[in-house]
Length: 248
Ligand SMILES: NC(=O)c1ccc[n+]([C@@H]2O[C@H](COP(=O)([O-])OP(=O)(O)OC[C@H]3O[C@@H](n4cnc5c(N)ncnc54)[C@H](O)[C@@H]3O)[C@@H](O)[C@H]2O)c1
Image (cartoon, rainbow, N blue to C red; front, side, top):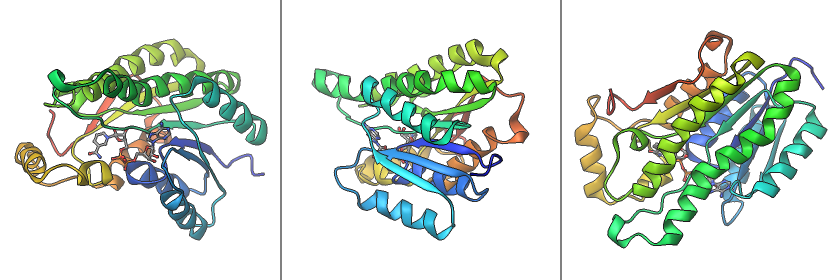
């Protein structure tokens, strides 16, 4: 096992932005560990196939990141098997949209558990080993919706704003331990999550984007990669928007 090879853990790595992040880190030859919670393993296998073509070591698992116990057990195994985690990318996320008046308690709870509690679970689980090694990068995927809101997404917006508050607080707690904690807030990105939106909602988003186009998963992945690189050693507690100007 090469000591110089970085170990990267990415949640929600089977598709969309998470897959692009896996592939971006694979370009440096890093060891990629990703989890997902898809009903089947089609997307997982596709990502593994792409990583295999790049000749990188890759491991994947179906894991519900909203489960505190399962996440704890997963990270214990990762640290036992690979000794360290250099970068954690908390990317897993879901939408359960409804107007507030129609939103069920289940829609609220599920979204907060998967999008926000998971970030607490994974960050807490990885922190001990990062503190020991006195280095680490944690990057949380928030959303422009956490900053400016969006009709029908009170649960999602709250979870993504929660990620921003969590990021800043943990960044302060870990700053003198050699660990940086930042968030990336994508705007409207071309993935399954947005492909399922009604055409009207897509047009409404597009009309608000100064750059006049949807973003690609690679454009988010590049920013995540940069935050985990030697070019971003003095950046912590920040929320970087990747939104074509949707928020400025
Ligand atoms: N697509 C966008 O326009 C956009 C914009 C802003 C923010 N985001 C955020 O970016 C992240 C990725 O979004 P995407 O568009 O690539 O989504 P996607 O639906 O394409 O992929 C979501 C990933 O999360 C995983 N996941 C879902 N629930 C999980 C759970 N309980 N445990 C573990 N993994 C789980 C899925 O298996 C999948 O790998 C999300 O956090 C999302 O909120 C996306």
